[in-house]
Length: 400
Image (cartoon, rainbow, N blue to C red; front, side, top):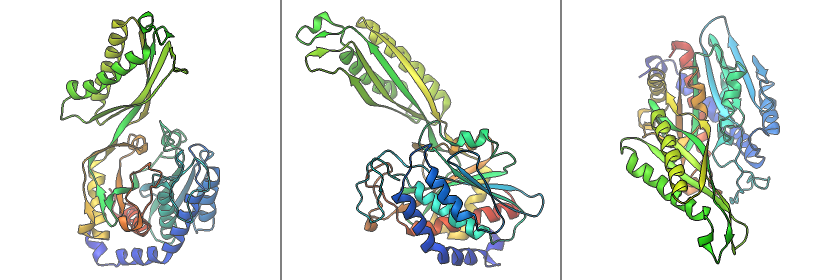
């Protein structure tokens, strides 16, 4: 436990402050939810964030990228630099929810909780701007998390993590009940790459398939073989998911096309498993195509890398979370095969990423992420504001 937190009233003060601004935090989230913007197009979202931050005392605004916002709160000289990160972008999904603040933009929706992440960090900014400390709190409102390889790399390239001591992020999570926080040392989220396999045969009339080299049949066999690659060529102790998610070929029912294209993702926790998987897909693709007189090419587009939490920082953050929210609120979970570009930040500074529960069937927040009816339990926002504020202040005061 963090002893001083139980004697100087800090948790109570933070809870009171978060409770006081909770209606505004909910309103911010609803505004962002109603006005989603896709990756690299978060212009209005970024301006909305700037509007909320401009009048906060001692907050310095930076604009490192066109659709990201970075704010600095500095006190005194020297001291640690703690970076808190949220993401701004939405997904290309048509919302099916019926809330009055549902998306007003056709084909775009906050279906992963980024509207809540931004609102929570804005709430934490308002509290932290009024707190005494020595050091710097750097607030990163990041663009393009949903589009690999992600906007985090842009912030790193712009020098926004230079000098940072610790980076912390928090993701709303509908697989956890509201009121719970999952903190995981080490590997927490998967890396993922996208791949495309192009099979080239020779087309012809559907009445005479023997006169063609059918890329659809070959592509179907390659898809099956990829599943066997995971099931029979990968250890059960290694986490690996390979999914073929798109299969495009042909334009007429009576024509066997000359070409078929398969696309999907490779999700992994260990880079050695990733490399072996790519080599295996390349071998089986070329071999199957050759066996039928076709050719096939594999293109792999590197995406996110795994999110690997620093064990020392994570232990410290867990202690802060227990002291601030209570032992019963803190749990751990196995690594998830979902991916997040926060992993890029953790390659340049130590830090940790947390999951904040927002599952509550009574308010409809039980749908999975990226679902057209995804929703959050807005009661979790206040807890997120408290958690992010407490983590920043305690890491500044006592270090990681």
